[in-house]
Picture 1 (cartoon, rainbow, N blue to C red):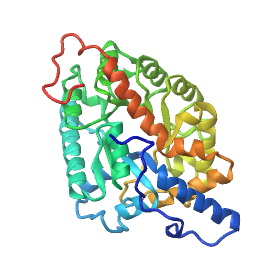
Picture 2: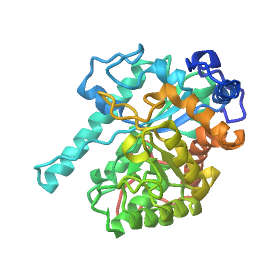
Picture 3: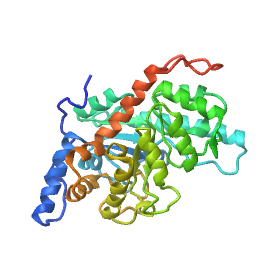
Length: 368
């Protein structure tokens, strides 16, 4: 199978495609270097909410530029995106009883999975379903955008691991514990079972939105790396969605990955502010613990930092980091290498995990 060392196909980006205004020679050089780097090490973006948006507004055709939504295939390619994690989270249902809410969440999640699979099938020349690290590398080498399904909401698991196995059989590879009753305040006994089974299935745990104490517990309990699919540094901006340094340290110890978002409320209103958050996460979590999770996919596009209003802005961000002295080896980890590593490490861990938790039957298909 293809691997990171294989000669990749171009992801469709060149310096001439960046459409940046003319500037000093050093800046143009940085943009050229960014384009060259992204042609080999494209962006693996940890969070895009387009699936939910398309369910609400199915008339969008993302094969052509579409001003009504901030994500389409031309802009993904212009930005050098080679892998995308499509979020399957659904808004919490207000005004329903706990049992009703759980049933509704499962149904909504199944609809999200179906919509994501339909999206990938609709654009076979650009998107390719990815179930593994090999799929991720192979899609890149074939000029496709590797498409991972997840996260799905952890609140869909209400005392049984059957839903997790079913989601895995359908192609889901990320689970978000935030909001689940087994991951509020503390990680319950069932929560530990969920972690064990996620490790066995090579399903990544996405700690975005978890309370810091629970996030540290999850990072410590998991034998596979955990991720934060979209976050920023609380040390720079104490937004409730941002991650404190104590969690970044736990993530570093667990070989995990914090993927920085492009959200004005969480990062600030400029490309430079986003770069500051990347600098901080890299300093605390290490070069192997920082990634990118922009959280594009909105309609209409929400407030975004200047220069990063859609996926086509990635080259400008990489150029900024080059100007700040990031070595190209660290940028290759930021864009592609770290995401590939956590997916592959989760697969390695799954091969070492014992059979399913006692009292639960394995899935008929899709189990590890």
